[in-house]
Length: 213
Image (cartoon, rainbow, N blue to C red; front, top):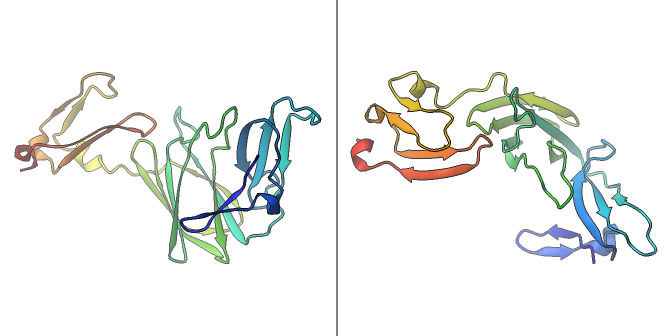
């Protein structure tokens, strides 16, 4: 049976009957997105062949008005246009929410590459901080609510800029085998992290003490 659970700060409440998501249909995917662009999340369920239910999908339209909202759409001027792997932190009235742009959220289904943030009674977004898959960062402040906004990496800043402008040499880059780092004695690095082009961590290690000094 399909189930709808409400997170109750450590426990979960079965709310399936209340919202009408309690069918026994054989399905292949379930995705959440704002179908009617009214600021709340709807559910789309794709179905297999079910006896007595000749339909390819089932849409559950959310009719609950939960207050203000904003949809953030990170976009990059590169092959990873939809910024898969980007981390977005949104702060409003002292509360910070964090979400990550992902792909392949459900079997045979994928949600849009955008992040929905519920804001309740907050009328403005104080700050949006994006860490892009390649490690660069962007900040956007004083954003209006109840909108779908596209934020790009056009003016993103690199945390490695000052290091790369020094004598530190990293080659070849990108690499699929051996990576050479020269002149690391002149840097302040104490840890090495290597990620792929989607921002996924593939290597993490501390430097020997002699290099830390």
